[in-house]
Length: 300
Image (cartoon, rainbow, N blue to C red):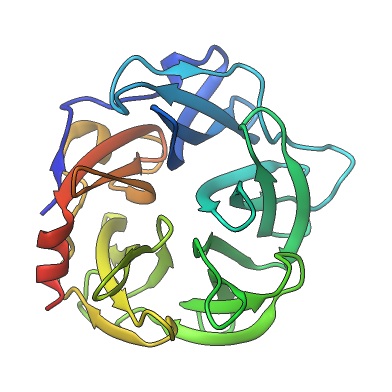
């Protein structure tokens, strides 16, 4: 259902000297610009978060050379860097929250920071211990508390499903609840799933774009689907797409550091359409669009 807005990646390793790959962007609109928070992996294998800006959200990106979040060799929780940011504007606080994965020898864990200008950040720090990732914060309080989707991993069973936790201050998280799991068997999302961009609030419920993984004889295959969460009880799944809505088709989505990957992490709503930013083959960034009404119709 999603239509690619370009035939080529909008950003890739050629946009920043010394980078091996640029992918998995968080997205938001700030004033008259689209801002992307990009995972930039260097040639050591370490990842940092860099900021890019564009007036039209598609071309002519200005990329900050200095990272907003960078690896810290003296901290075992992020000595290998920061990965896969999601951006949410919190109107109540007048700032953006960056939810990302901090990665080090202690394992991947959920890390939060806030910013008002994407030049400086206030570090909240580790809020959920390893192994957990794919965190995204809802844009407003629900039932008086902030809500966050995240994806713990259970190594004994191999399950990796979406959970939700709550917080009164963005720092202490608890009241964890199961939301949605991988569908076993032949399904396109049968192995593991994870939340994508921040849920979009609609009259029908919270529209969640998520990634799903299926194992094939050629390796893992990552695609994007959608679900609808109850507006006041978002741990309740009202509907879920049976089919995937965006999958790897182009050469740059099928070939790269990790082939056959479409990994949605950022979205903006422009003129009634969802503009989806995603990592392609763990190497570069693509963008695709679909009207909000079409997506909701898919879930009706």
